[in-house]
Amino acid sequence: MSSKFFDTSNLRGDIYGGLTAGVVALPLALAFGEASGAGPIAGVYGAIIVGFFAALFGGTGSQITGPTGPMVVVFAGVFASLNGDPSLVFATVILAGIMQIVFGVLGFGQYIRLVPYPVVSGFMSGIGCIIIALQLARLFGHEPQGGGTIPALLEVPTAVMEPHFGALFVGLLTLVMVFSWPATWGRVIPAPLAALVTGTLIGLSLEGLPVLGAIPTGLPSFVVPSIEADTAIIIFEAAAILAALGAIDSLLTSLVADNMTRTRHNSNRELVGQGIGNTIAGFFGGIPGAGATMRTVVNIRTGGSTKISGMFHSALLLGVVLVLAPFAAKIPHAVLAGILVKVGYDIIDIAYLKRAHQGPRFDLMLMALVLGLTVFVDLITAVMAGVVIAALAFVKQIADEQLKAVSGEGDGGEVALTEAETEIFNAVDDHLTLFDFGGPLSFGAAADMGHHVRERVGRNDHIAIVLDFDRVPFMDVSAARAVETIAVDAHNAGKRLYACGIKQEVAHVLKGLGVADHLPANMQYLTRLEALEAAKEWILEEESQEPQSNDASVAA
Image (tube, rainbow, N blue to C red; front, side):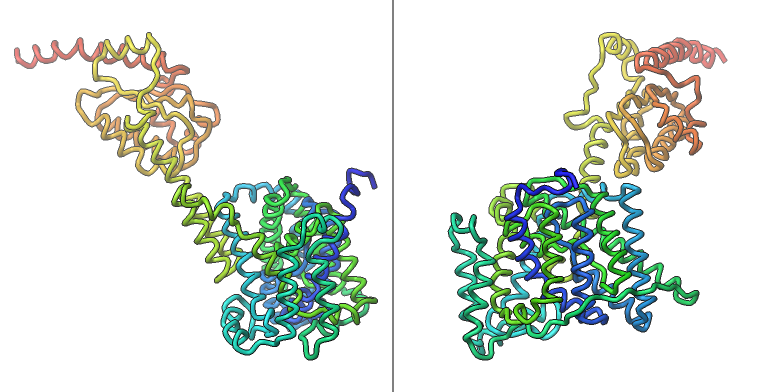
């Protein structure tokens, strides 16, 4: 491979990062495998296979891929609904992987870049809070009863009242090491790795210390996938959910990695890599995976920055399964808990929180909402809610500005007229009204557009209207219907309507939706000056006929 594909300039950091991420991933992979119904070893196989191939072919150098909570929840439902039949269950995983590859090839990955910063910040901070919450009881030698943040927090009072002093000692020692490890020492050996080795060695001399325990061993066997007629719909629907969920999960983690490393991932390539990993994992009985935020952060914080770190993380897990299981089994839970508390603290967006009160209040509330949903509901719901609310708020802001411009209010209310155009308005007095849309017409403004136009031209002396589309590059259905409403209202009120500067794309939409029927071709002009001159001629002609009409009526 070329140096562009494998960057060895950070080899030591990648090895440290991959090693630490692999150790952190091991208990998670075992737990996720058990929770999925497929067994602990299926979780480890998923972490190994998806982690390796997603790193090799993906588009986020520092990303660590493996089983994640949202993916396991869906997979567990699939496993139960298909009665645990491996050929059917893992056919779902394979199909989900293929769908992700298709997503990447079709370029769907670019849309994740539209997630605004307060949502990413809330998501990151929420992950940090979850990590800390899940580890607090483990620092005292207790294991939370049940999964999720709430059971973990409910276990804390009991853990504090009845601590295992050996676990508390190694846990506190780990915390001290990871928070106070000198930066100069960290260039030689990262603090998490030093704490892991030190805490484990001390733990060997302590009685009754909760440790990882026995780890399954052995190589995976090939699974022949099959799809039966009566389960095809279940498999396809579940695969689609897994594919979409894994794509969102992975690309959100890629955004987090970008934020931490000041790099930019390749979204579509990342989806292809994730798809390849999940497809291969399905053939070997591994549960599906996605970009894992916590493990990715561990990797970055301990020096990992290229795909070598993700591949090394998988290689370590494979080595553990084949050779090192007896040694890894001795790692105390409290040591891992101490490492993860520091990781959680590091990814909480402290810098933004310190200054958030000085920024837009809405952004702070959005960040807090996403954080709360992340901690107490789930990641996907949090991000979807955050993106939808942010999008609606943005559309509302744009719509308000557009409506101000249309109604003649605000800074953009005055249209810059040329000398010739000004002379036209002076000649026709208040009989002519110009609407310069000033840019794309958003669907948010479309609903009230007709109302604001009616308000401005409601007087009887406003007998001609010019709609300037020169700065409208495109138009959706909502905006087209708003233009239709304006045109119909003008016709019903006996007012003359002119249009100018209609782009080809806009004209195509107006014609296709029948709106062009209300804007005759002889009333459309290329430039605003031409439309204003035509309106002026008609207005002056109408004014010249008014006295004659009045005289005729008097004579009659």
